[in-house]
Amino acid sequence: MVMAHDHASSDARTAPVAVWKVLGALRGDELKNWRVAPIENKVSAEERGALDLPYPYGWYVLCYSDELPSGEAKPLRYFGKELAAWRGEDGKARVIDAYCRHLGAHMGYGGRVNGNDLECPFHAWRYDETGAVVDVPYSKSIPPQAKRPCGGWPTAEANGFVWVWYHPMGEAPMWDIDVFPETSDPEWTAYDRYEWLVHAPLQFMAENAADNAHFKYVHGTATYPDAEVGFDGHRRTGLVKAKMGTPKGEIDGRIANASIGPGQSWTRFSGISETLLVAGTTPIDRDLVRVRFAFTQPRSEAEGPMAGLARALIRDIVKQFDQDKVIWDRQRFVERALICEGDGPIADFRRWYYQFYAEWAGPEGQKAQAKAAA
Ligand code: FES
Ligand SMILES: [Fe+2]
Image 1 (cartoon, rainbow, N blue to C red):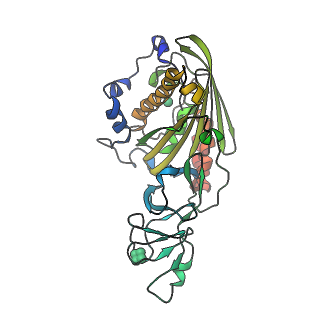
Image 2 (image 1 turned 90 degrees about the vertical axis):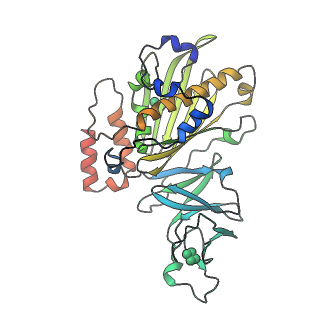
Image 3 (image 1 turned 30 degrees about the vertical axis):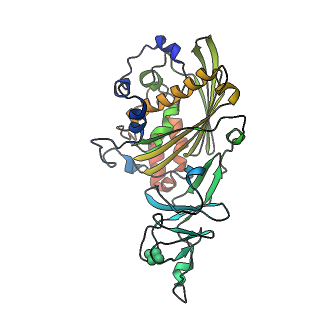
């Protein structure tokens, strides 16, 4: 989670911020490349406790809508699985497990779109969106087993993204994606996009919002944020009211944010410059997550006399994510974290978040939850 502060307030920073050393030397493209580069001396997922955390269920960003043109298959890897995505003739995005059930070709590489179906590049078996084989062009019959749906993923399209629903036991979607009219409003700017590969379990990123003390030591804010946090079913909401230093003096800033399950979150900044951040966090493997930040602002502010401030706000939010990444990339999961007064609602957060670990729903999982909450 991010908390805005303007550059002008940097004089008020009191804590020595260790991670700035790592980032200070990176400029322009170097910094952009650093965000998605592999890391050296990466410790195994097992040693970092990442294998103790399953993939939580929910809606996740698969890609931007414009990254999935019609007519060609796209290879993707998420949730520790190889996937093949395509857009049918009808314009609908579809996703199935990538390996063909015939002889195992990867259909994301060279798979052809045939009508609304996907054709394997090896022997042209044809799959529909449920993962059922609907045609074997050179054979009079389709093996009955192949006709059964298998490996199809529920998809949706909203806010300029293609979304996929993940559930380890194949449960159907349990909630809707939050939709923002601003993302298709011509009065608002086209997305300003940022992307990271974070070498950590997804939970670390979400937990950041409940971690009050780190704002000072990682982000260099002068004070600890005073955040109202709410948990309601699959939603977590937050509201931060903060004084923000600007060249025009101090103003009252407001940062409202929410997570809708583990994969979707948004943040609305008001005060300095109206900004909507739509974020997607999608696990690739247990210790690797792709993060997308997409910003939109009213054109009147982003392109008017306030443009400098509007850009600075985005720069600052992105910088804060860079700072967090330095920690997350090397952090290990501590199940029985030693939480102390002033840390923020980390235990509440975990209690809420653990509902999305479907594998933990059994007796073992409940034990783990009780232990974590203790
Ligand atoms: S491997 Fe896909 S059709 Fe043979
Ligand atoms: Fe942070």
